[in-house]
Length: 170
Image (tube, rainbow, N blue to C red; front, side):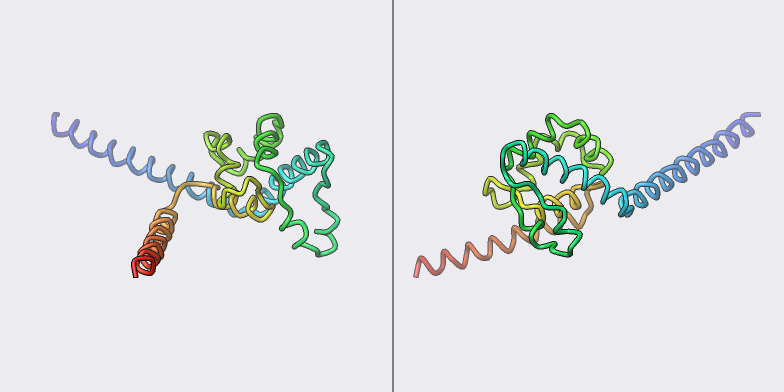
């Protein structure tokens, strides 16, 4: 009798483990499909860009000219910059923007730091291309390649600083 219960427990454990592994794999696949969904990306990016356009116009500045995109003048809109405070403002007050960020799998705790994250040169302004590139990189889970990229960048900076020190010491 004890042997039968032991075998039953082992079989149950294998079944549960297999079920959990399958559920995890299915969840990963759904997330992958969502991250690769260009329509979802485009729609939610447009929500954010439209909100930026409205805020720029409300501040009396020239907004984003979406006609330039339709006529193939991508550089004009991609090079356009806006103050970091503007991004902070639309994230804080526009529920559609926060919903778009959520749909893009941007972590909620990153919302308050998003303008800082997307301004890598610390200039106080963010270009549309920095916004697009940064949001794309923030989507989904962290990957090992993200950590390795940062490590390689730090090593490169260390080498440059050491080279500069050698030049100054000579």
